[in-house]
Image (cartoon, rainbow, N blue to C red; front, side, top):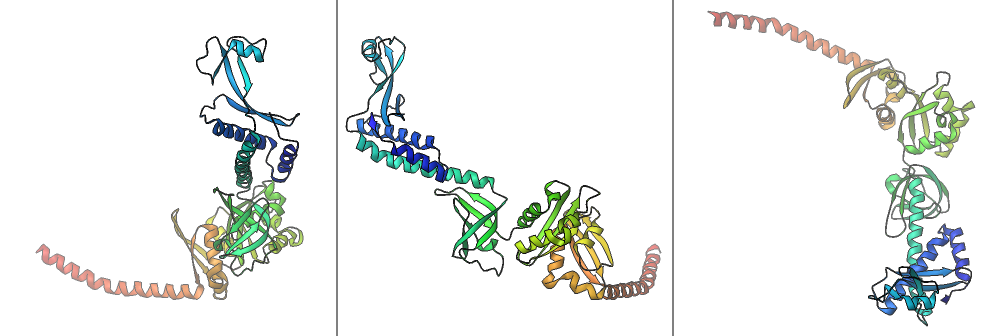
Length: 385
C-alpha cells in the first residue's frame, strides 16, 4: 500500500465546496489512474481483474488483482492455486475469489505522475458536465451576471460558474455595455464544447419581457392571466397581448398593477422601453383594433382569413394615420407580429379617393359595355345567317 496522507481528502472536500465536484469523482479518478499507471509499469494489457482500493482510515492506496482459486492454474493473471490462496487466507476454498495486493515497490512516484494527469482531466470533465447540466436547466430563463469585457463586438458576461457570450445580434441597438456593470440576460442556448460549455445569452429576446411579467404579476404565475403573444423592438417598444382565464380578473389591470407599479418596475428594468399592454380577443377585428392602440380605428375589413396569408384593411381618421403606422412603421409592424395578420392601413381621405377611382372605373366600363354588346350582337347575327 502507498501512503497518500490526509491532505488529499481535505482537498477533495474543498473541491466539492468550491466547484460542486464530489469526493467520489476525485477518488474514483485516483483509483483509475493507479490502475493505468500499474498497467504501464508492468507492461500488461490485462486489467479486467485489476482495481485500486483506498483506505480512508489509514490514508493508503494500493493495487489489487482478483484471482479465482482453482486446483490447476492455467492463467496466473486470473487464477491462483488453493495452496497459495490458503497462505493468504486460511479458510479459502476452490471456486472462491481472492484479492491479492500487487502494488510494486517504489510505485509512488510513477503513480503520482499518472494520477495528476488523470485527475486533472477528470476534474475538468466533471466540471464541464456540472456546468452543462446547470445551464441546460437555465435555458429559457433570466440570469444576472457582470459584464467582463467586449471582444469583437461580443459581450462577455460572468454568470457564475462560467462566462456567457452575448453576440451582436442579441444586443440592444445603441446600448453601451460597460465592464463591471450588472446585467440581466436571457439564456438562449447552451452548446457543449471540448472546454467549458458555451452559454449564449440575449438582451433582445422577447421572452425577457415575458419572464419579467411572470416575476412581477402573480396572476400570470397562478395561471389566471395568460400571455398570448409578444412582439418587441428591443430598446424601443414592446406589445404584449394578455388574456384573463377568470372573468373576475382584468388581465390588463393586473399587468399594470396598483397605480402602475408593476408595469413601471418592468419598464425600469428594460431601461424605459415603452410597453403596450394589449387585450387579446379571439375576434380578429377586435384583436387588430387593440393591437394598433393607441391609434383610433374607423373600421377593419378582413380581406383574407387563410391561415397562411391573413390580410386585413384598416381605416383610420386622417389625423390618426401617422400614429397608427408609427415611426418608421414601428406600430403597424409590431401589431402585425403580435396578431399574425398582415395589416394595410389607409386614412379616410385615401379611401374616399380610392372609392371615387373605383366608381370612375365602373362608370367607364358601363359606358363601353353597350357598344361591345352591340358589336357582339351583330357578329352573332352574321354568324347565324
